[in-house]
Image 1 (spheres, helix red, strand yellow):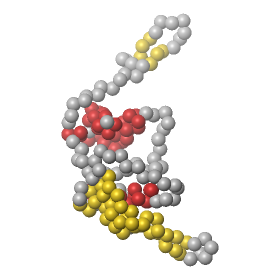
Image 2 (cartoon, one colour):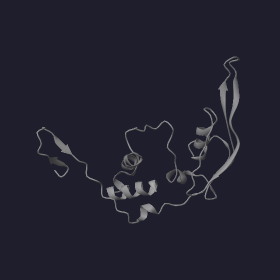
Image 3 (cartoon, rainbow, N blue to C red):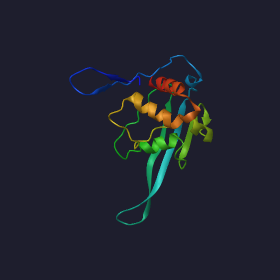
Image 4 (cartoon, rainbow, N blue to C red):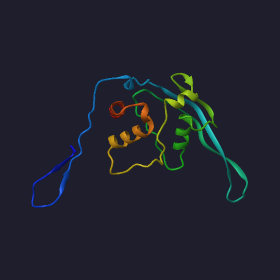
Length: 164
């Protein structure tokens, strides 16, 4: 085995070293990711909740006429206190929630089912291990999501592209 070395020492142990992965930096079709502009206009989302005092159903507005744009290569930060509607907005603009008023566009066209295959977001309750690096997390996700359709080299290239 290449990754195990026996070291002569007064102690009885085996030193194990992890070989570095081969990473090909050449471009291929995995790096040809379409650029997408995401735009949401006048997004309003309401839900029915039971009033704790009166026990009657009431309408609660979670999002009220929210508009915004995310351009390719741009980092967008959505901030606010707990309950402000951040996750609700992400659910709407990612296509996970369809019960809303307003419009969501990708590259000028309304969000549709085929867009779901090209865009998504990682939900806030996904598990991340503090002992893993960003690269290790992305590599693990690539193995789970890209499956056997892509070889190891292609998955590594995709991870590198996302990190860059």
